[in-house]
Image (cartoon, rainbow, N blue to C red; front, side):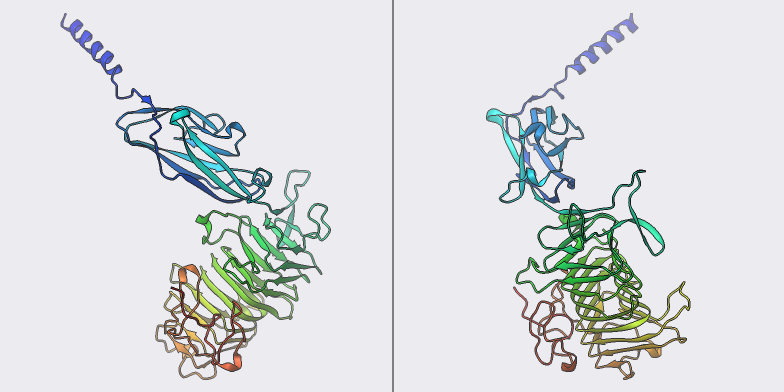
Length: 504
């Protein structure tokens, strides 16, 4: 009898517990709170999926509630898609009877893939709303996305399902050669400012052809993609001074992830590679960022490469990696490189004037400038460094020593720094680094003084009249205009920027 009584009590407890009101819900009354009233999805290219954005919904009441519907206003026709608290609903568009506990919250994750034809033709915005409930209880959160039209360049698909490939350094990689008579895109060797370009794989410039980038051209590279200028081919980047901060006349190379989260992430794409034997290169007003190596210059012919008014930022390995190249560089700025901002290896012939080589990479095993006349795996292992001359430059950064020399005595190693601000903080008896007494290699060196850049983390290397680089240049090396077209004074300042009062 006692056991029978216990079973009855246990059964009643189960019955009563199943009738508890802990999970009873009441209808939503339209008093939901949101983490934002508008979700701005960053700019996307047509028919390329966006990143994922989040919206948080709060139930501030003391009751568990049931939201009858959470849906996109455009319903199943919407170009947005959602997950609500991990649920995909009806194609990510419509969700019914969503429970939200008292004093609790849930997440909605939002993505989009839209065509330029889906956007408003006046402003290229694609919009929709997330609707919570209906009628008197209706609440809405706006969704806004800017859609960019673009020219897409990519390897063709072969009949066997494999992708078209080109050969770089004896290795086959996904890529294609630009065609000046392409039936869809027309002249692919001419990049204009009419639409941005998105490149998948390596875009190759064929032998004896020239690729030209007009002022204002915008090129976005997908992961592991790049530009390859083949033997006897040429690169012409014809950017110009811009009147506004929008850099409307600058040629810009960067990764194809447009979300603000990716603004300064290194290694999003591969490199611009100038192959051995390529020729007649000219680069003016280029901004290049977030590559593995910005410019990889592999023993071109003996013609001098002109690189002027160029900015290279946030490269996982090198800003410029030059192998036995001939470079004349003016008004170049490089910052944030995992190994070196400028690395000249296996000799070559270099003159850099009014350049700012800074490296604030997060580790300390990097250099702003590194020079070498050797290269492992080459035969012979060393090659003449005919000259490496730096005039009116700044070589600085977050490491103790930002200048590195790696020389073999078997071949020439000729270098000279004239009127440069240099960071090299450790004392050494190495004869190569006697900055105050070695007049053959170092003239008028300002050692370990702060150039007081405006904002290194934002890649703003402007200086004012309190900088140690102010009016310390030699007029005989002067480039009349700085990187943004401002006239230099006499004596000129060091680096790529003429000094000015910082804006408040």
